[in-house]
Image (cartoon, rainbow, N blue to C red):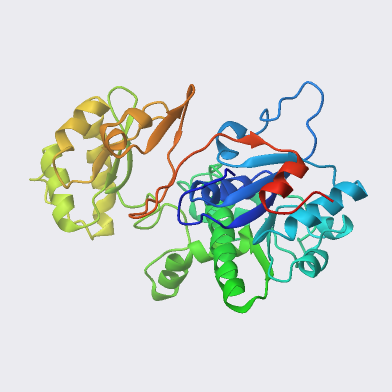
Length: 369
């Protein structure tokens, strides 16, 4: 949060109740796009720096933090005064926690009828699991998504929390929040946004739920076009122990791939699943004959859809990412640049700052209570 913010969301004011999981990523993206955000956190413990927390070096960028003890009446009142000046609030507590603090939707909307109250949970505000603990892997487990991952030879692999926390969580929170802000600006009436990972991930699975009853998707891992079942849509290990990604779904791209491998005389029938095991064995043996970067160079100027699998250290220096400035370095930390990009408004990363609640209120045009 900085005065004179730029970006398409400049002028949008959001209170972020400090949390882990989807909430800080959602707030980071909104702040990158210019929203003015005050993150409300517990006072730091003795010996723990203000930014010494999970992901804080990146996930807490571009906005201010103020420290309040929400168990104290005076601090809650100051927060409500700040909320009165905001367009939205986002929080990620279990259902009922904000209400017990006297900061639930009823209290906040009474202070600011146009407020959008964004709630982010794994299980949702209602339902038999609503009050149970859980993490990304648990939420994924009841959506059909986790079952679809892996090779089917054992339990599903542990996924990164990109699909649940961030795809089904943060992105749906952002979409709901912005939709409700547009509605509030048109009608003057705020509302609650109940964003929930176990709702969001099934929405991400829409394509597969559409395909399954038509016989286009088998409800078993590693059996389909996009889950590693197809030999032309998976990763292969190379001679140096590193990997390439192959994604040549279309026949013309498949033809370029097998030509590059020197296998264009093998008579593969791409759409014949009975031929998939032979293809997989041949592709695996072929890719194992050269190092990853040799394959990457060979296919770089083709449409064969063969690319190197880069590590986190390699990704920021890949020529494509360098040309597009997909990563930026601030201090000693390489981090993702703001995304998406806009033609007429510049998004920018700003340094996080610490404000007293009085300063935060003054910046938003309200004297401290």
